[in-house]
Image (tube, rainbow over the protein chains, first blue to last red):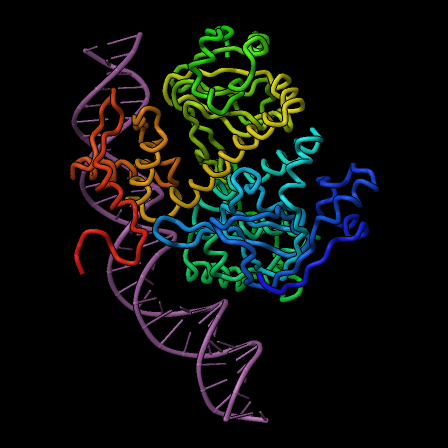
Length: 242
Length: 242
DNA sequence: CGGTTCATTGATTAACCTCAACGACCGTGG
DNA sequence: CCACGGTCGTTGAGGTTAATCAATGAACCG
């Protein structure tokens, strides 16, 4: 929160923003865009740094430009539960536009770069550009879809199934086909199982060759095999012939 | 889907709509309101009736005026998972505004009355009334909050805790302090546990006097005791002195 | 009054949690 | 340079919980 690197983005930065397609700025004329950019800030966060905390008042809605952010809540019994993973292109802190406070605790799982956009600026834009309002709604909806996917895919079934589905999820959403590497504790918090169980399952997958851990590449996995573990859709089981 | 009762709402109907506070119509002058109402439809649904199905294209965004609607998804392994319960005042089918298709299957758990609003009308209103756009976002955000609460409260902890938390949830959100009665199967689908386990826990609660079932009143429960089962927040447990 | 649906309960098995110990890795400071 | 403490992943043993398979009873409806 203190003296972290922070600067306004250039037009160049903006062009390369993973969020560009969602168009905070995409369909905006260059002069207008330049005007808006001066209000924005790029900021870096170190691994494990708290980006914001639940209940805290805030001013900036952010777009993830790089890295992986976990958004957590705490269950009634005090356990941490990860309710969303934000990756490049995702928006975090949208709830500020409603009541000015953060509804989650956001923590960097890898080195992270955010583009911070003042709530007022976003707000004004929602009011004046109907198309932009629609984009924001789409962004909002993405949160819903994500949370619901966590409910159906990552919070049901056996530990084996959940871990497999998490790997598929990471693979599918990971930037550049990269499947980001995350720790056992966080996996557990995502899946609603303990760290020990997670570790056992992951170790088992590795022994069976479904999976290997590469510090640089992230998880490298045999998607076909993982998919099979993740759960069948039809009535029968997958591998053995009838 | 066939010849179900359907009529446009009157101004009177509108005044008494549980959604009035969210203001699809609240801050709207009466003449304008009357103009819009002609496009709306009130429609009733019987218990267990499918209101819409996942993937289906749709035209109407709806507000629940009466009853209880479950929104379900199917997990990769085919099990039904309830991702949201919509009660009077809640909006369902908002996702139509993004891609014109329903993202859940909606089923009436009790007799239900909906106010159906054509997507185009809502759309046009979003474009012309910025305040309305904000209301829609708030509605969207309510879905997120709900889904996340399901993740943290209803998908973690023991079966006892989950059932207790579900009762508290129903009590808190139930219209008129009424805690709507739902079946064991649906409880299980909400909590990510089996019907049998749910039944055992509910039966146990009833034996212990935490809970009684009343066809008209819904669940009647000893909130203090249920809260205790639902889980402690502090470091120590609730009842016994140290 | 049969048939259907729903809740309940039992017996057994499988899955997971808890507590605990151990080793690998890493950065720090002697 | 190596010893130290920290964090993180792995693994084991034992206990608890919930899933599964199966049967029975209660309520409801035609």
